[in-house]
Amino acid sequence: MRVLVVGSGAREHALCWRLAQEATEVACTPGNAGIAQQFETLGVKAGDSSGIEALVRRSGFDLVVVGPEQPLIDGLVDHLQSAGIAVFGPDADAAKLEGSKKFAKEKMHQAGVPTAEFGVFTDPEEALEFARSRFDAGLGVAVKASGNALGKGVIVCHQLDEAEDAIGMMLVEHELGAAGATIVVEDRLAGREFSLLTVCSGTHFRSLPVAQDYKRALDGDRGPNTGGMGSFAPASWVSSDLIARTETEVVAPMLELMAQQGTPFRGVLFSGIMVQDSQPYCLEYNVRMGDPETQSVVRLLGTGLLPAMTSVAHGSNQIPAIETQTGAAVSVVIASPGYPGKIETGLPIQIGPMPEGIEVFHAGTDGADGRWVTQGGRVLTISAHAPNPEDARRLAYAGVSEVHFPGMQYRRDIGA
Ligand code: AMP
Ligand code: GLY
Image (cartoon, rainbow, N blue to C red; front, top):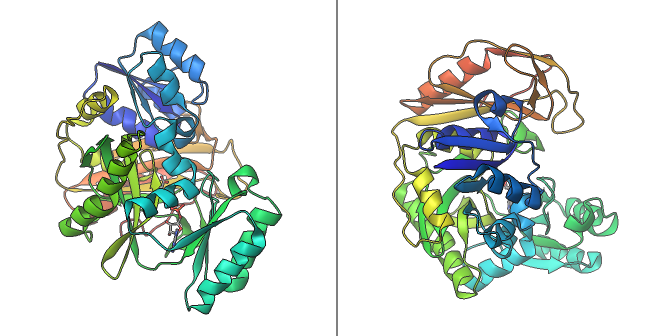
């Protein structure tokens, strides 16, 4: 089996690493410099559907696995499927669950999925009126751009004037462009969060080990939101009962609704859950594996991911079992100085010898072994697998201590 992974981040590096344990060959497009050390990288961008089709025809890959959301939302899967190519990921109709928060919330409502009360707005006055009514009722709100705003589209508001600013930023100043031209205003919930990644084929599904990510830049969940500063799995505070409830109340009804409406979901459905008063609420769906959740989750998988993805790509209703390993995984993201704001690139990186149990997944690097430089906001993910959470955490930070570049930033509390 020859597999082509589409994407260029640490998530895709981790996917290549896991799939290579089951495939005869793994390649990545466009990949990055770190991925290129271990796998063939092919240089065609994720947004170039015709280029990827040509690549698959030329090189004869048996399966394409799409990592990031934007090509899914833009219809890469539809394009490859109509060319007769086996591809793992949802088509554009199903990917709207991530591409449009308006669509996702309306579907949650229809399917009876527990989620925060909400309204959908294009008019700033009406949005503010709704927000005011929620604050008057003693609640808070979250203001969300409906479109894909690359992690910048959600503002959680504790005061009405914050909501007013967020609504103005999106609907009056148009700072998020088309992504923020329609917004969702919903009740602010409070509780712990986890990410459930579920491999789905129509109404059939199998969940992967439950994970938790860290979105804020600084220790103790302070500072600005980022694309993710670390993760761990399994999130052991999430009981098997809570996972089962999430599957029954959040995953299954949505899969059933999508199938009923003629847009079955095939791929990984990522349910972003907040637990309030013991009830799992769906904050959002994503239509792909999480970054940096994947970097921890794949460390806990045994064999079975490749056969599962292959059978989903071929439209089968049987998803073979995916083995999980014992132990715990902790992944720490190392970011450039300034991230998530304006960053400096081209800083020389030293990567020392890594202890056993560590995998280094590259995102924003350039160069090659011995002469790496920084090239993006999130530079590396240091991912540890050990017999228990405490050892995994210690091991991850032992790995981090082998990495040096000027101004490198990372959180010290991942998995704590
Ligand atoms: P999202 O992009 O929808 O995952 O939102 C990013 C983060 O904003 C989530 O992980 C939560 O921490 C927070 N968030 C989103 N929606 C809500 C909500 N209704 N109440 C409280 N926090 C929220
Ligand atoms: N870690 C959150 C995401 O991948 O969207």
